[in-house]
Image (cartoon, rainbow, N blue to C red; front, side):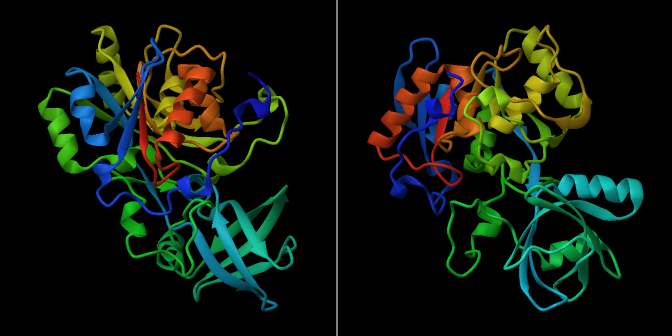
Amino acid sequence: MYRLSDYCYNLPQERIAQTPCQQRDGSRLLRLDRKSGDVTHHGFQDLVTLLNPDDLLVINNTRVVPARLMGKKTTGGVIEVMIVDYAAGLNCLAGNGYFQCDCLVRASKSPKIGAVLELGDEITARVQARKGGLFELKFSCAGDVVQAIKRHGQLPLPPYIHRTNGLEPGDETDYQTVYAANEGAVAAPTAGLHFTDTLMETLRAKGIEFCEITLHVGYGTFVPVRVDDIREHQIHRESFEISEAAAAAVNRAKKAGRRVVAVGTTSVRTLEYGADETGLIHPGSGVCDLFIYPGYRFKLIDAMITNFHLPESTLLMLVSAFAGKDPIFRAYGAAIQSNYRFFSYGDAMLID
């Protein structure tokens, strides 16, 4: 269960969703029962009956930022910059007064240290260092650099969603959850994309409680595992925040014997990272670098809502740790057989 090849599966290309469901909560939902291994098929709106009346749903309220910037070198060559750790740039700005973070730079020829990149008509970025395939860039402009990035940047979509002429009209809203609030992610917490305000109100009316945490999803979530033994993989680091109110809500639920249902793998990682050995959680903020793979002992979560994940990805390893590798792969096989849509704009799973 530790070999990378153990997490490979064949997915027909047409199963990769390129657009979201016409209605967010109109997507399909596969339920995997962890005790029996049974798989059943539902619609996402069926959560109203599938969840327990006193469940606590933990959602990630991060908001995707326009992290993709087009520009040129001072020598004239066209470049594309993808900010991969926007939250680190914000932290640097707060502490040092300038926006500096790691980025992907695509160009016909890689820029050298000290090179200046011109992004739009008001932003420049100086190459401070190179870190493997990433570049550390220091962004500058005459005014507010964060607002300038928002004006000139584009919302990044995952590399497996293809657009011929840039973003489609709906992507700006479709690739945000309806409860997105705290800016800092460069990828969406996609399990949350299925929720609508109406569905959330219906769930609350049943007695289901929501609480919000923040984990700013970084581009590292798309970086492939490149080692044969997954235990040797270095997981990416992402900024998180658990408020006192959120910690109190989770701890109340645990002490009362209620289920804590994590919406998305980002919520799973944050909750498990913040939990102590007794299964209680503490408020705080910092950087989460928890890699969950089979053999991990879960301390807090009782169920999760998630999408279908890429072959050989750390997210597939996480759900395999929670439900068991063989049940997950049987469920994925059933989803492929039943024409479910996969990845960010695809359908969802309830694992409980």
